Length: 494
Image (cartoon, rainbow, N blue to C red; front, side, top):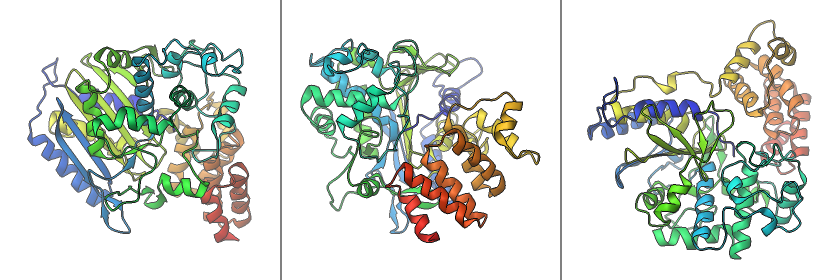
């Protein structure tokens, strides 16, 4: 689950708006009526722009607003409510970090413990990696495996560890901090080893049951009160994690487990957020350690630090912001704590287009100022400035080879998500020829990214190039044999 580079932009939106006192030229204009403004705005957005999801605003432990909008299931006309379950993505990492710190409080492990304590056969280059380094993304593990099979790849504990320990590190442990899913899943495996319990069962018995949280999980009993929000990609049904687990033959597996994909309702997230405010699940000193800025996050110009399972940054008023975000490109979620203001914001969406990253900044402006001074939905469609640069290059009539143009402009792309963002915007705009140029470069640079091959297949299909489309979908299936999207498209074409 990718931690979106939209973080800095969102930080600017939130911190620019979160003034609960007069500071310089900023004057807070919050009143209780502002929550009504937010409700009116989101209601209108649901009707006019297909917004679908929920928002939770808590002040000093009390809910100011908790409400769902749009549809959990459009086809069945099931509304999104405060009981609707939706994926929180990488906010799951905050739960894994909390579980680790619970074990620290129980004297079952220490943040200074090294991997060789839990895994005697770990290679020497990884043996001294500490739990602290895993919690702060400073272990050196890559974000994903080189031959990553996606969130639903069948990967048991032994196979996951074998792959994690055999691949080279991205950097020396402790040298810097770069976001990693692999490291967080290793922490979840350590939880299972230390406790003898399944990761999810430990969360339930040690964290959720004491808080009367009933339904934060990967899977739920089938009863009448459970409604899981169906994910929609550009208005089309994507499904749920559960439907994808079923197609994969089970799950969650370790590419997802412990680092992403937990589902929750607004009601249960309210209980979770307040457990930190009220210090009911962890001691105050432990919470302070979790929310301490331990190490600078690489690539964010000194504006973001890693705590334990979270990001720490400063607002424009030099107040503290604790941030968790996550998405699989379908569901988007963000949990923001502003402890000096006594505030918590949580938003989750199940439609890829009008998502949390684009709507929450407007909500914070309405909360603190009563108006939307800079409409995030009307701003640049690009989450990453690099994506905008590449887009501007590729739409030029003269651009026929993106690789050559990037060389001329002395640009190097190390993150495939940048290319994915550009490609999907080109598809959305129906610029098929330019999209083909983009995906030809994308699949050459990152040949093991399944979504790139699927997208290129879609582009060829729209250009009426059936045989090329079939080849793309077949390549996607080679990389991930249980890939449902490629299977469905091949069925239609063949």
